[in-house]
Length: 503
Image (tube, rainbow, N blue to C red; front, side, top):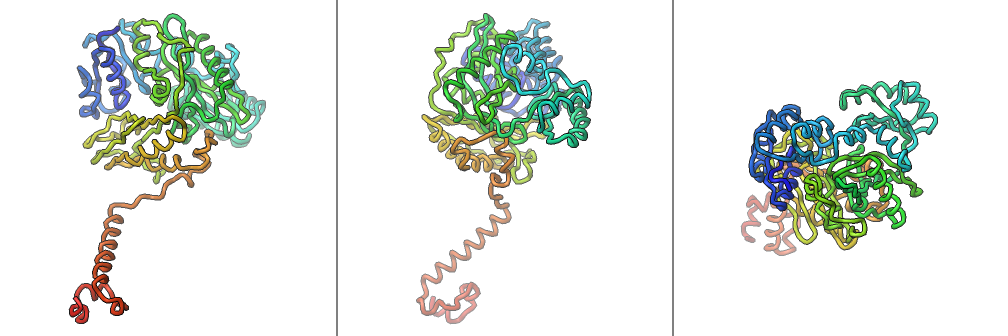
C-alpha cells in the first residue's frame, strides 16, 4: 500500500478521496488554487500546497505543477478524482515518466476510449451492439450527411473527443444538418481542440443505463450492477438511481456481461463505467466508456457495501481484487441528487456567492457528500456542483420518501440551488412509476419548474400583512359581534371614539 497520495482535485470529491485514504492508513497531500485557500479539502489533508491562480489552467489543470508538488512532498501516487485531469492521457503519461502511480487506467486506455469513434469500434469488435452511425470520423459535410441519410433522421452530431453533453447537436432533417455541421465542428474545436465529428442515430425516449466495473492488474474484471441515469437536462445528469426500475434479471445479466467484455477487450484497469442506451423495446447499445470514478459512485456503494474509492487505491497499489462476480449482492435501492449552485428560475444560471447558512439532512440511510460550510464562497471558476445527496431504502418507494425528507431538511442560504427542482421531480407521477427516459426533463421543463420562491422584500411585505391581520383578529375577539360590522384597521389604530370606549 502507498504511504502518501496526492489528490489532484478540489471540493467534495477531494474530501471523498482523502477520507478513503485515511481509512487505508495513507497520508494525503492536497493542492489548492487561489480561490480554494479556505476550502475543506485543504484543512482535511495531512499536507497542502498552493499551485496557482483560480483559473483551472493555472492550477488544477497544470500538469507540470502537480507532478512537481507530488515529487516534492514524497508522494507515490496521484488520485485525479473526476473532471480536470482524470481522463487526460498526457497526465497519466507524466505520472509514469516521473515514477508516480496514476490511480486510474493506463494512458493508452484513456487515449482509446477518449476517442468516441475508437471506443465505438472497440465495442463493435468485442461483439457488443453499438448505436447505428459512424465507426470513423466524418471526412466532411457530405460524408456526414450520407451517414445521416443511411441511419435515418433524427441524428446526433457529436465531437469525437467530446463528453458531458458538450459538442453535441440534435438534427431533425437534411436542411437543418447542412446549417449545423460547421457550427458543430467549430464547437468541437473550441471545447476539445479537434474539429472531428461523427454521426449517431438519435434514439428517442431511450434510457441511459451505465454499469460500474472494477478491474485489477491481473485481468480480473467484475461489475457492480447498473445505475439509471436517464434524468438529465441537456445531456447533463441530475438524478441517478440503482437498481434501474426498468431492469429485469435477464437484461442485467446480458448488459453486465457486455460491460465486462468491453473492459477485457481493451485491457482496462481500475474503476470505470460502460454506458449504454436502452430503447423502448429493451434493445441496448454501447454509448461510451467513462474511464474514471463517476460522480454518482456513492449509490452503488450503498447497495453493494463496496467502497469503490478504496478499491481504486488498492488496485493501483498492485493488490488483487478481493471480489468475484458471485460475491456482488445488490441490496435495497439508492437514489442520488446532484445539488448545483444554479437558479432553476433563471434557466439554471450559475449562482456564485457566499453561503450564509447551512443545514445538512440526516437520518437513517442518508449520505451527503459536500465541501460546503457557512461562510464558504462558491466560486465562478469551477463546476457548480456543491453537494450530492444519496439515500438508501429497502425498496424504491422508501428511497424516494427518504429523498423527499432529505431535500426538505437541506437548507442552503446565500446562493440559489437546484433543490426545489429536485423536489418537483420526486413528486412527479411518471417518475414515481419509473417511466423515465433521457428526454424526460427537457420535454416537461415548464411542469417541473417549481413555483417561484418569494424574494426577501415579498416575504417582509407578507409578514407585515399577516401581522396586521393577526392584530385585527385579536382586537375583534374582544368586541361583541354586533359591533364588529364595518370595523376597520383605521378604527383599530385608535382613531374611533366608540372603539376606545369598548376597549
